[in-house]
Length: 291
Image 1 (cartoon, rainbow, N blue to C red):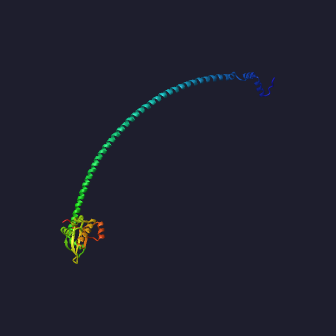
Image 2: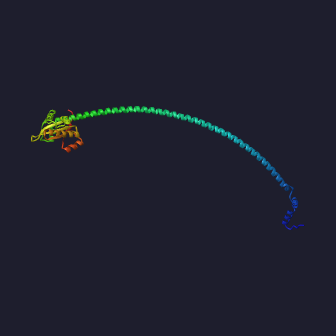
Image 3: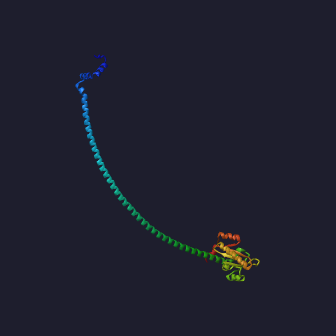
């Protein structure tokens, strides 16, 4: 028979004799404790099966909920898509209506712009044409007036020179005395006496010279003066005076002098008379006033 000296010997004996372990368990534990594992298994199994059933029921309910939710969502999606499609259709119709309105408005505006531009162009062009015609007429009138004033001034200057030939001669030299203011008849006689001296194209201009004077100097020698008269002496006046003085010199073989007479003289004429030694006699303002 085995000897038990320690707790380990007891454990080993129980392991070697399982029936002893069961008998010892019944002696130490109550019936409730012994049955506890069985009851626990029954409880666990029963509870788990209920849990599984409840879980299945919940899953079924959840699946039904999911299916119902999906069905409702599909219905909502269809309604939403229908709403979107209907909204798009309405928006497309509104866009077409708006675009048509814009095109019609643009067409009307373009037509109005064309009518306005045509009106403006016709009116403006007519106004410009009338204004230009009026300006041209005004310019022509002003030019005529200025020409008339110029001719009047020139005529007054010539008359003043013809009234005062002694002063013009005196301005050239105090020793000169007037013999005669040459007439067109006198000049014609000179031209006939010396044909060919004055070119044909210059004969009439020479005959119409403003003032040609026959004078004698202090020694009784004949001389001639060719004077050109203008209110404002210009370079053409100086050139004609020089030319006419040269014609007189060649026609008479006598010394001749070029003189210009006027109220004012321009810059170019001043340069020429200084360069060519031409005499300038300045009329007084009162000399050229109309009488």
